Length: 125
Image 1 (cartoon, rainbow, N blue to C red):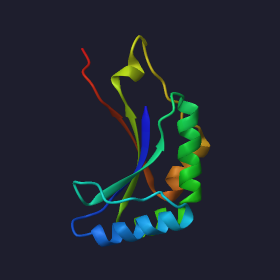
Image 2: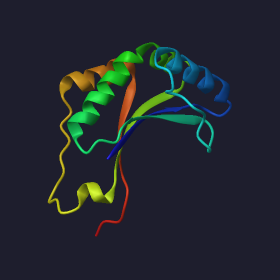
Image 3: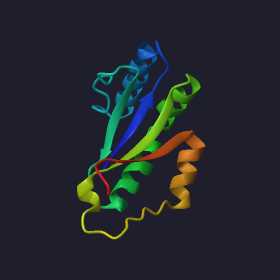
Image 4: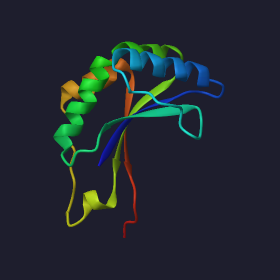
């Protein structure tokens, strides 16, 4: 499992995205390095822990501590999303997986205008 916070802008928004990245670094150094190769977006790594609880803590802490740059992003039309990536090894030998989202986390995301995405990678039969 791997969780990032992704900032995605419209065409021609690279300058605004770089400004948001600088604002994130102003809150906590080393958050933003560069735009993604595809352009128009960048991602900040939040957690690669094996436990869902660690991801929840990282998500809530990031969204709370970065509330000003996140609000500025939304104001500029930049979408902000938390993307939780599920790899095949996260699902091996499991009949099912479940991810509880406490209301306080949902409220924090909703209040800030942050979307939540689960992306599953791999082949499933």
